[in-house]
Length: 408
Ligand code: NIG
Ligand code: FE
Image (cartoon, rainbow, N blue to C red; front, side, top):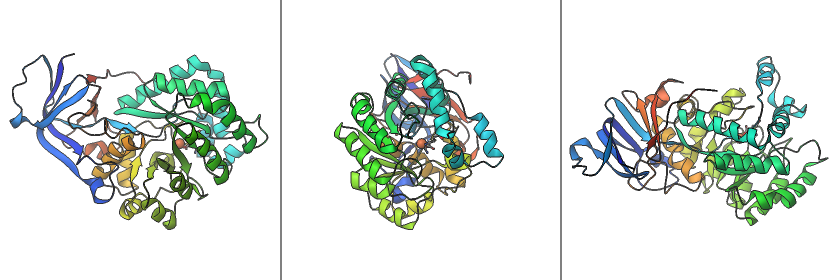
């Protein structure tokens, strides 16, 4: 494989320093090189610098003219639900007419309607679905994605979902505790089954476990039992928490040393203070809040209090049918009041930390994966500024340009 030289770039931008996760003032500190280059070798970044300091590149080099383009690190989506069958376009229309997400869920729609379609998809159908969704993410600049199970809720389909995410190159997370399926009378009985019959094999594929801690889903005691067992199988821990109500997700995440607690639309001042004093990352999902017309999570307050935050899409068919981290960055700026620089660090280095990969991805620096997004824009901040704009020109994953592709 020849070396890859991205040259004459208008701007080369990367989160500053080498720490992770970034918090406080450091979240918004970037290294910005005008008229720069990125040299990649064997899927890794060899050097980053100014064109004026680029020495002779002696060996076999493929050369990309970056004139007029800005380079940022490949984006990292640390929270998605890509393993599903069917769609929720009818529910979307009903919500537009005033039905609420929680009411639809309680009436057996919502997550459980996707569970029915996902079970019908079969392993091959799930693989094709995740592959298609991964293509959408790549086109939007996401070079690393996490993908959850959670729409199978039976042994076969949960395991098939995790395998489909892994087969598409994603980071699999076991979200067996997403909802209680209709064949179980109660959540505790379902958890007994999950822990005895699914977890042992799921833990061989997944890197992390996740739970939906919310009224109508699982309570704090049930989440503690599930996550404790998952930790016993070597999985990192994540929680969906404070989406509609504060039901104890942040204290539980801190108690268990979870990697992250995600959503936080309902988090108040006490939760902000507890999270800020901890090592748990708050993953903010503003596309989900927008899609459900819910309050935005308190992003600015979390950053100002010193919490480590990441941004993700929450891509799924019900609450966030959106695979675009650039759109999420726009929402972070306009709704959460994060600067574009803070938003960039939140969906690169901090998201990589949530996935346990901050030493390998999320920065344009020597030794990191050659995952680069080239923006066709006069300033890198257009990635957030141009709302849903066609700014992502080229996506490079492991040192190779990803071909452009059709939507369906
Ligand atoms: O993160 N809130 C729980 N789970 C997903 C949505 C699942 C769905 O509606 O299908 C979320 O928003
Ligand atoms: Fe989610």
